[in-house]
Length: 339
Image 1 (cartoon, rainbow, N blue to C red):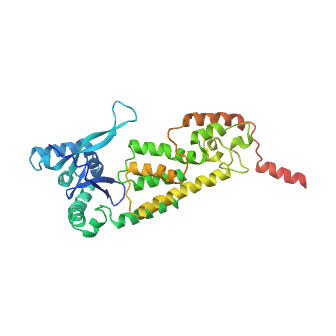
Image 2: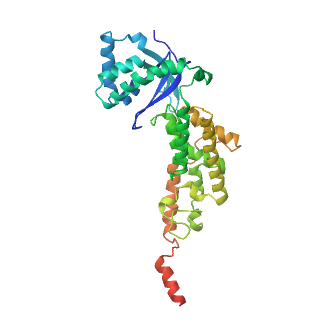
Image 3: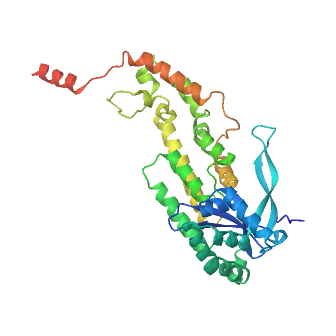
């Protein structure tokens, strides 16, 4: 019978030198455990190829299937109920199985992992993890101080970038989550709700509700307070579905202060060597907002993104017909007339 080791697990990341492949592994009994899917990503081959290699390894008796496989409860989509998750047993394979597959896979990734695994990982896991008294005092974490220092450096680099604040938050989510999976339900939900959480905290409305309620062709500048070519340039259709463009100066300051405070909060947690799963990082947003006594968004709002965009575009089509624009030519004519 295969063992469930979910209650005593640590996690560690393996990254390639090019940083284009990242695999999260579970740690137990002085070895690591990953899924067939993770092995496929690691070695750059199809999952079916991994399955064939494992089957041959077990059939020939090279490894004992009962020893190198552990059934671990993993959160998956509920097949019958939309949006619900469930714990399902998933096969994880230990380091011996991973290396055995690696030696059979003809790929650059396999070679790099073989070198890393044989020369670094096993030594690190056995001596650096179970025999290092200082590491035991630190809570037996599999993440050294270099991990937190480098993570903090990446977070600060993202904050200093020219990317929009919502892109910065999602970038940091991807960097900080040790089990990051771009295709998971948690990732999708985080990306879909992060902007709304902060807008709701400041205005009591989701981004879609702000756009739907504020976009009005009868208002000055269609209700916009800023746009790409502001203050004197033409308002473009692409300006109208952006919720931040409808906020007043006070709301914008509060929004920027809230986001900056959240970034500082995450940096502080990293400096104190906290590790995040995707679920934990996602929860950190509400935890921060609650601490700052902001209102917490509990649902998806009353207006969908599609409805908001359609309303904004309809209002713009009417507004644009009479949009007051003074071109450079118009300005030149006025100057000439004054002479």
